Length: 293
Image (cartoon, rainbow, N blue to C red; front, side):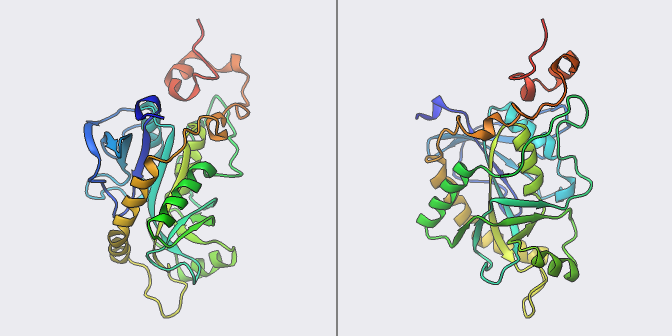
């Protein structure tokens, strides 16, 4: 399928991956959304012939910590720009001996321990309960893992990502507790993005770059921001190569269940959803709740 025949592919970069220089930039767009301002301008252009939209999750100069990121505005902005496939890149800590710094994990499960974030577009009418049994897009994750293997990355497809609030790292007791839950990696962003992408009917997967062993591993240096940035910078080229390889191979996914996530999820009777809400959230709801004539 030609790039012009499909929606742009979104990329949201995290700690240490603040841009992708190989993007042939066409424009930079600053958006206003019903949920406030996104983290930064969206960079729109082409990568390997495919149209892409890139956003720096933490803003210019990494000025926003994970709990301060306006995830709702970020994801809404991608949806407004026509994105239906989103690749999230983020730094994570390893919770397993065999997952070493510089490894890559493409998780398939989540545990969300965040406390104070808005992780839903729908906190009042309409009441929506989206299914999150499988929080990441299988089709997208498989392509990312396949491309990672082909370029020589030590990649694991599958695993559980435990998402903490931040911005502080775990205590040693917390880190050891999470290990008893049989989790694989720890981070601060993927759960919130995954939930919002599901509500926005966007296929979402995470390229999780292992930078440290959190603080559970005896003999290993406890996680610090400098450590994370050092390892992400070392691994950034690999991450960029994975994305570049995957961009041209991501299937259309228009028949993916992610694209129909709201169909069984709307609990409110349609006649009780006012036009003001339908207009405000038109980008998310128009397929199911068009504005009344």
